[in-house]
Length: 292
Image (tube, rainbow, N blue to C red; front, side):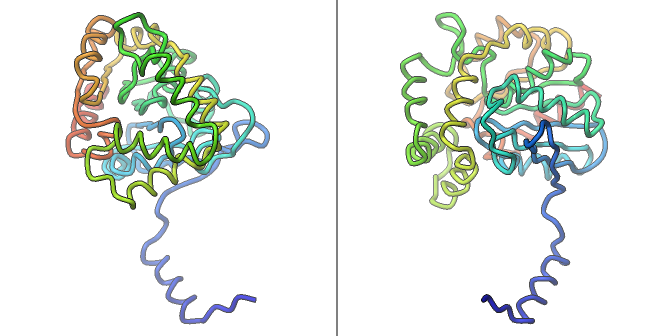
């Protein structure tokens, strides 16, 4: 039997009163037995943040805090990621986009600014594909090509078939998945000193998705092609791409050809929005201003 001292209980209770809830989190059942965790904070014109492959709302901590002061800010853990239900079905970006449609309908959100990070862009593009550009106010994609592996030679893609096959092979066990995330975060995502504390924070998010989920989403993402949707957004909505420095030359040339009206900003690594919010947030604020 565990015994708690009254002093410990009282001090903990007072701590909760002083700090209050950290987030305004809740759940939506998008299909029988599948609950999606979401956060809905602030008021004003809506902004929706969609995390990337195996990640959670926590990656947007610097954006949620900043933009919820003047906007309604919504984010969610996609199915089988973070705090959402791990399910055998629907671990692909067509379904993730459909879940996003259901979530925004449930919250009565109209014409949001859509912000996707990495494979999260596939969900926002899927949303626009099914709901049309009339359902969004603006779109930002953070560091992903609309053709991750399906572009032509010389296009902006995530890597060669051999490289992506190696990545896919590296997420088949829990231990390998942790190792891959650590390598990717250190080499591609983060420019600052990759401390053990930062490693635990990143790996903890990704490892909430079992390896078979990570593999399913990886295959779905790499074989996606949303170029027509990205072109439609480019023609009809305020649109921006923020890309990592290592993609700058390739991505800029690709987007000049396929999305010539979109803003393109290049800096930092794959997670530049988290690492450099003082640079990223004004770019997003500028896009929002164009949509209002």
